[in-house]
Length: 296
Ligand SMILES: [Zn+2]
Image (cartoon, rainbow, N blue to C red; front, side):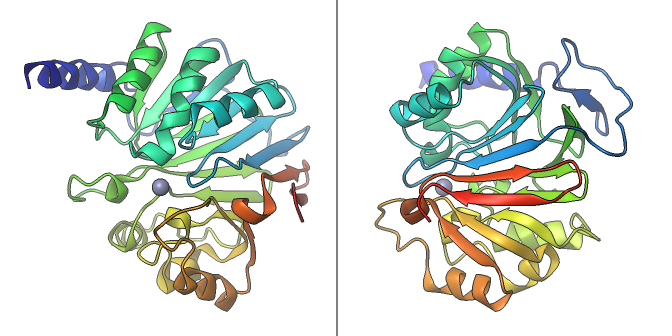
């Protein structure tokens, strides 16, 4: 218990350190945090890869000028290492843990050990597992900057990453404190909100977090297609055109018929990493994009 408390204290210090003020914009692509003027129209391309990590989530976002964001890392260090190698990732400018559950952070440990990680964003609700501790240790060892999620943006090359922090008043539950990210590149929009459940999406809607947002071109299914994640009110605001479900063999019944029916009802095209493998989205500067599943 003493050991646990110490770890928790160390973690809390790490998480509260270097937290920029609300509304700040940091450039995750430059050598130091700061602001810069972004062109209205991006250049180059943006690539999003919804990685096949089995039952779990991991989304790798890269710009053509070499900036990288990783949103979650799946449940397997082995699988994540294979992806890092396959895509030649040596530096992650922005690592976001949607929440501290195993199927989202276990693979991040491999990234924290094998690649340079500049910023690490999480909900501020520390995990209580050895997996979480090893991740925090590895990031601290390489002096990653810890940032508690707040309503702010990061610059990733010519792309913008808008953080959706957990709404105020959520109970201390990992899923209900999922950190969302909205990736913008010209007119293109991609949205992912971890394993957030209906209470969190409802609070985001009430706070106007999605006002004027939809349609979202590519959207990550909430909670691997669980029945308590995506819901009609939320999807009416998101208006997803394409949904990618991060899912593998599981005993939870993911993705559920409820979620699949919801996606169908809003006319979204559905991809799932268990059937389609890694799903790659290539976005051009004009906002047009191509979506390519590894297995069509
Ligand atoms: Zn999950």
